[in-house]
Image (cartoon, rainbow, N blue to C red; front, top):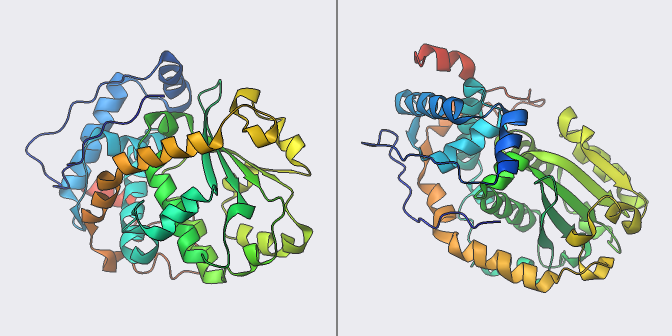
Length: 330
């Protein structure tokens, strides 16, 4: 899996004098997957990027935004090249970051809390399966809940998502998640308030352009089922359909290829080495992720989005599909 480009100076000018030229360089596995699952080919990609860039340039509320292909393609692939829906996803993403900056901005891998959470082994990127899907692992018991609360936990996930989306393989193939709840205690679950859950789940459901292929959980404790059920009330039906619960880790790991299993699951992966590699990726991309904060949108226009009790998926105040048409992008 090749590392993303290491440029640190993506422009946030919404009407740059010129745009970068994109070249598809991934293996044929991803070219075929992009075509079969996302309707992507060279012609559609180029047309869609042009339309999305024109929409951004004319948007009355977007002040600053990246327009490079690396950034915009994550939204186009997320919405399978429906340009109005991709624009809507971008609009919501920008509004979310501005509305909740304490959760989603200043995501710095050198922040002491983030550093410690990574070094504690809460998260591991295990690699790609044979179908091109990224596999990631969370070991919840590694989370120091005496030290880190919902905000730090949420910021960790936000930083992970921003870093993982730098890989085009993830944008196309999506990812599979392993959640190991072995030896967790009530404090791992009870500290999340309802407002925290709503903010976090809305980001996962509607605001980040991520393709969940499967979420596998094992050894979830019975004493926390009511909290999980509450959390899932904020999840979209599509996300719920992708959740698979396992009674044991043995059962869960049976769904994954042996080459992707860490040593403590009977596999050969050195998770400490994997962790060092991912931390190096974070360090290499640190300036890119922090520079996302330079993007800007008139957040007052979107204030009602997160005040509604029940948010309708893909709903943006005023209707982005309507505004897309009004801006006369052919």
